[in-house]
Length: 408
Ligand code: PMP
Image (cartoon, rainbow, N blue to C red; front, side, top):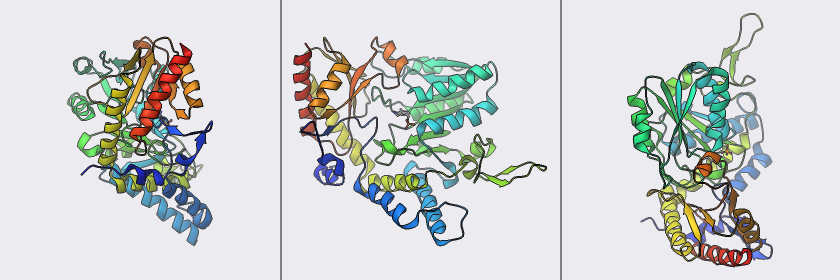
């Protein structure tokens, strides 16, 4: 039974009671960041009220409690992502930092001039730019995996891009701009057949569908807490233990060393601590763990099924809007709808619809190469979460009709 009691879910989110410009908030910008349930807010509050302390170093009670909760969050992330070993979970500031870790540690030490990295046309800038920065220094080549007219990856083209210089594939699991769900398991198998690794940006998948990094056979998998009902400033990188063990640290500082000496050199901590230099966002890590527990209590499959219902309903209702065109019509899509409307610029729609209490995203969604390919510089994007309702979808479409009439 995958039915979801959305009214019960909504009661966990204090922010959903607020008004915007005198109208009830209809929050449809979940792909940018999701709202936070009270259980997560209470976890942050409880941490600062009762056991705020630095981890892994104190011998006092508070430090012990904070360390235990922090390491417990690692175990929660391990379970949620299907990783075999909690040492394979590195806490980061988010998806962006997780990708930068792979680029600057694995990439800097394994990529040589003439090597090739395959990056999909669907990528968020955070899975393009770090690779470009390193490529400028090292001289490896970046090749693009193209999309078809529906915004799905062209798998024949993907296969044909491989050669003996291909070292790594960087691809998102779900596109934030279009909602396309990529066949990452199949892509991983193809990459491995060619001796290449695969880094999967899971920022948009972790909140919406069950993920099992072992079943996918991902080498690296990155996500952010704030898109899965957790706080900002925290995320995680999954990496296969053997890969992480062979990789050098990329940031130096406290907590990531075994011994430091001016004469005898410095030795590094074991994984995952080798990659967690400095004081991490302790409270946010613990609260992200609580967010994943909140998701697991409801059931990630149940949330995904609910969002698919909202997507189907929105697709149906949006067909009523004259001149509206949806970008990204891949057969497998998450609850994301990117659209443009004839005679109404995305920016104007976004500003005016906010006046009616509806929050959608407008712009390039940090995916300029993709939007450029589709001949637009901006779209409006509505994206769903567990707490959205069919009535909100109706409110959104009716507000859109009014706005479009005004702009035209
Ligand atoms: N990748 C994807 C697919 C995303 O949607 C986002 C956030 N929009 C990111 C990466 C970057 O995540 P963060 O800003 O949390 O590091």
